[in-house]
Length: 303
Image (cartoon, rainbow, N blue to C red):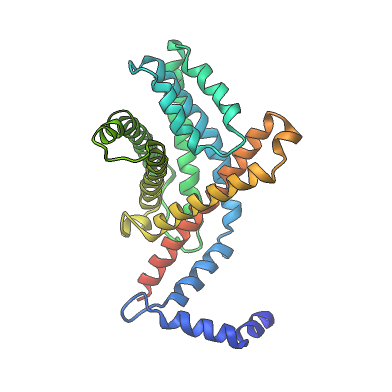
């Protein structure tokens, strides 16, 4: 408290606080200062990093069975070079230093038909993916600003629904991107609408990834808690998560390519360590976006 009092007694801090208080986010109620104060309190008292660790562990267990199910379907899809286009999209979602490791796994599964595994992998992937969503919802409910929780059975049913929705969303976006790349881009090039195909494709990939991130986080935030459904589907927290995801992915890529020694120290297992760190960072980002929504809802309740 003494340190806090000394900090707030500094002239520059006083001016900053006055400026933040002057920015009104609601007609007669809270200011930008109120929002930032409640947001920071939620992050500190809500132990965001601890919750992110639990989420990242469950998500790591959930992601591979789901991908295994998708990859087992690829050999049965009668589209020429479909797995190459699919991998090209997935490859852009992976952090640097992991591409070679995961490409070997990807093409080993994609090029072999394992019909006997399909049914068992389907149920296992749904079960583990749902557990991953349950862990995310649990991380939301441990927020400092969340006071109403669901029963476990109800939570699991919501998680199952969200898991299926997210799976369909990912498949839909990937198929739309492949359609865009194979049909729309050549057509635009044919009518001389484009100058460079590669630049447009790169920008488009970023756009499709941003679309998945924005809609995916909006779904998680809306269905994650009872109080989340009392707000709007598209929220400031989703925008913050999308922007931080893009920034962190870019900076993390620079760090791995220029400063990291994971692959030199650990060999091929370094790719897994990089991937785990990447998941943990994004779990923190997801919770930061949720905490912003939770702080806004708390302030609106106090109006």
